[in-house]
Image 1 (cartoon, rainbow, N blue to C red):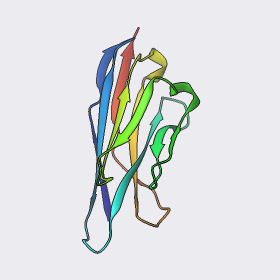
Image 2: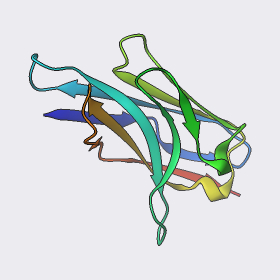
Image 3: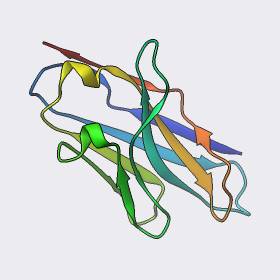
Length: 119
């Protein structure tokens, strides 16, 4: 019902920057969806919050990225961005975008995009 597509991952040196993008699409015009948050999962670790924007605009960030990463979105709330600055090798992970139907709590996920930070 909701498709989520991420882009922008890649290989970068420590201290560098990357910008990820995510778009949410609905298969039915009878409802709306919005792109909501970025999460990441490193090998052998649980998926963790990177940053998200609630429908009303409130932002939340994981402790390890505060001050370095910024999440933003377009006015239609269908495209989400993640600006990552001062990247560290510990930021290496698959980054996933999530989206929701408006007024519903079910999370829809993209296929993930790999971010690799070399030291």
